[in-house]
Each structure stands twice: as C-alpha cells, then as structure tokens.
Image (cartoon, rainbow, N blue to C red; front, side):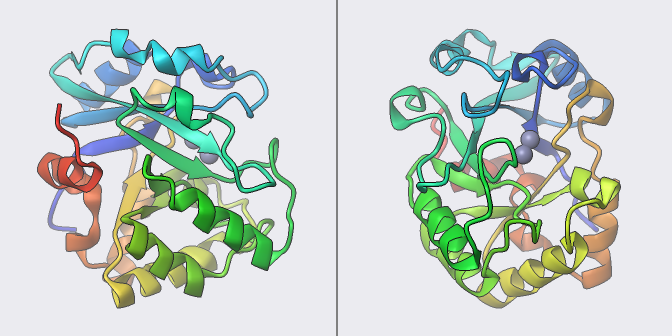
Length: 238
Ligand SMILES: [Zn+2]
Ligand SMILES: [Zn+2]
C-alpha cells in the first residue's frame, strides 16, 4: 500500500460497556501512531450496556482536537430486525456520521433477502456513511445488491481489522474478498478500521492492509487515507 491510512473512524471506549479505554487514551494512542483523525463511535442504545441516547446529544463537549488528532463524532448504530436503527434520527443530528452494523445482541438472521433489504434501508439514511463489518455469513447479505446500493447512497463498506485478526466470523475472508471485488467493479468506496475496544489496537490496520495488498485493491477507493477525502465523503463542514 503506497498511501498510509491516516484515520481510524471506528473505535470504542468505556462508554460502550464492553471496551476499556477513554476517549483521551484512544486519541493519545492515535497520536502515537501518527494518525491525523479518530472517530468516536459508540454503539447505539440497542446494544446491551451501551450508552444512553443523551451521550450522543452531548458529544460536542469532546474537544475537536486532542493531542493534535482531529476528533470526529459518530455512532456505530445497530441495525434492528425491522430495518430501523437503535439510535434514531433525533439523537444523530449533532453527529458527523453514523456507521451501521449488524450485531448478534440486537439482530437475528432473517435470511439473505430480508437482511439485505434491511441494510439497504439503513444505508439510505442520510446520516449513514459507513457499514461496519458486513462480513459474517451468520447474517448473510447479497453483495451484488449491497455494493451498488452503497455506491448509490454514498456509503463505504468497511474492512474491519478485528474480523481479519480474529477470523472467527463465518466465511469472513471469502465475504470480504467478494465485496472488495465488487467495490472495484462498481467504483464504490471502502474504509479500513481497527474497531478498537482498547487503546492498544487504535490504528491497527496491518492485517487488513495485507489483504488489500494481496487483492491489489485500488487505493483511490479508500476513504480514510486522506483527511480531505474523508471530509468530502461525509460533507464535513467543521
Ligand atoms: Zn460492530
Ligand atoms: Zn465496533
């Protein structure tokens, strides 16, 4: 990979109830790794133990820069079985972006057709710019539909470094390769994230980079290798 990944747009803190660092510890870790930006993206209230919706309306209290790293306000919103998201629009207005993802604690497999329909509905929400780890055949998705829809709605699919590191999700490597191929075919964007649940893994991308190099992925389609590209992608005005 020629261009460095400069931003980690999917990270968790103590507030999620199942991660172990603070916002400042994560930002400090990002600074130490030479990142220019970090996204604070807690789960929505659908995730057991995660924060109250008010967490997201108060997020503007976090400084926009910590240790020289730009801080972005986000949520990893959980897709619900009716195609809604666990943090609703009222609480997302002050956020820079929403990620949407499928999590076992809030979603049961409804079959490939319904899962795909639900995810496309979530992607059509104007606040949603990213889909986290769409890589688990426990909740199968029709990538031939997902990728063109992502392109249509200006949404980037994620290559989740944790998935590749842990390797325990069903068919995950095969699924990631499938959607990377389609993203190149349709010229649809991706992000690479650590999905860190501890400061020690903020900015850890190496397993994902190895895969992207192996498949010869076009770096132009990676959103988080340029602050400017990312800001344009989400329409960030500051
Ligand atoms: Zn997730
Ligand atoms: Zn996450």
